[in-house]
Image (cartoon, rainbow, N blue to C red; front, side):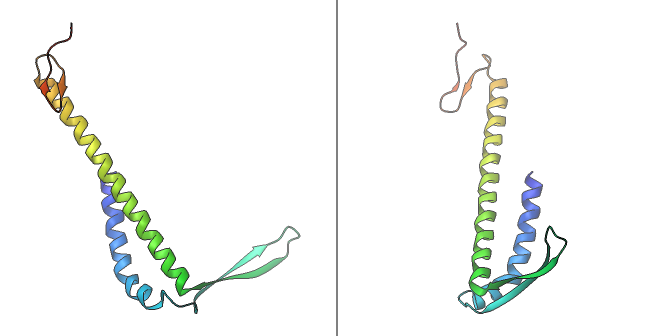
Length: 113
């Protein structure tokens, strides 16, 4: 999973470097930035062409949404890595303790019973 996060980060940074300048230039504009045409088939077999028009504000909104999703992915990866690291630390320290019980704040615990 960590390699997936690294690969996503690499791809995201490459795309971001190509898109950032355009987002900052057109982000506050209400002018048409892109038009998406697609064919819709109706139940009767008729086809119609429909268009979605995207403005600079839409482009900027999508850009910042992608940034938020990327940051949330990074934070989840860091948190899960920390949890895995702590679990490994507890396992190694518990094996080293003669009683098999270990606590982060006080170290080896006395045997129970």
